[in-house]
Image (cartoon, rainbow, N blue to C red; front, side, top):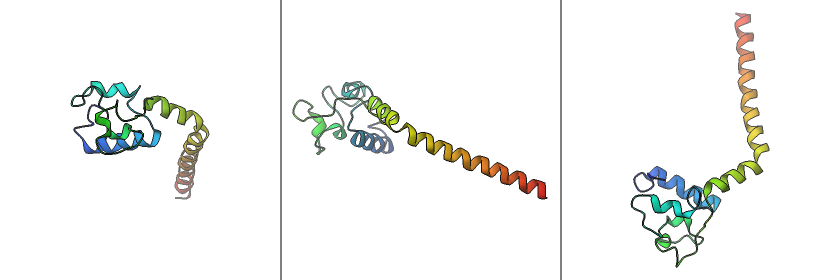
Length: 109
């Protein structure tokens, strides 16, 4: 978050994350107050419920997401743990299969 205003890649990543998960900040939206360049009551536009230009400059006037992204991402991971585990097991299976084929190749040589 500290590089939000300095690095375009970080900005794009955090904006996409906050828009997808409908969250703002790490713990909550007040985390943005500690970022240099962001004033009190100011959040990125991606925190706004209706994302429009400069909507994050006045949080009292525009509705924003108040829950933090850590909580939202944690909930998503807990809800999709089977999918994450299946992907990890699939990758591990391919790795083991590669080792088996390498051993067969070495034996035939």
